[in-house]
Length: 212
Ligand code: PRP
Image (cartoon, rainbow, N blue to C red; front, top):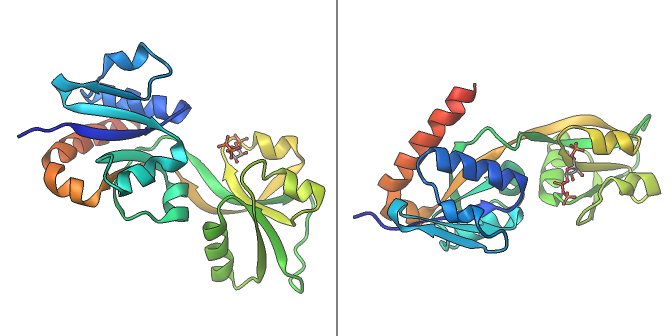
């Protein structure tokens, strides 16, 4: 028996791209275009219900089973390691996690490196692998300002076009990992609705293949 598939979508530009992919896959919900403030939309004929949530919260909704599936950036999955299945790389929302510093910065290995970031775990894991002793300064946004004001030596942050770094006289020193949007699923939800979810994954995968 088919039941409603609950989908957590990241609010914003990425979410709109994701919804367009779901729509093309046959999971349209036309009322989504009617009201820009509403956060829950459903189409009973297509057995689908969408929730718009903050991008960094998608994995929480999916992990706790309120949503069966959702779309989250690989950055969030690496940072918070939610207990979910990662089903598909949607090949959108592409960017990279990188170390950046003021132009001309030279690392002095005798000193602890001060690293400002929103992604403390990713930064910690990276420098542990490098065997470099660091001091993590956890910030919540505007990370780029930290090395300019002398709060940190480097930052670990997302770089997409590179414009933010350039406009603040910073440059990339190393790329840590490429990032893109991933389709994730709740583990027990997948047991019950696996057939429905697999059919959707197959259709979304066709679209990512077409783009290659
Ligand atoms: C990210 C990141 C950079 C910016 C990079 O911020 O933190 O500030 O995008 O993009 P660019 O290379 O194209 O300039 P985002 O807009 O995701 O939001 P945030 O400020 O909450 O981190």
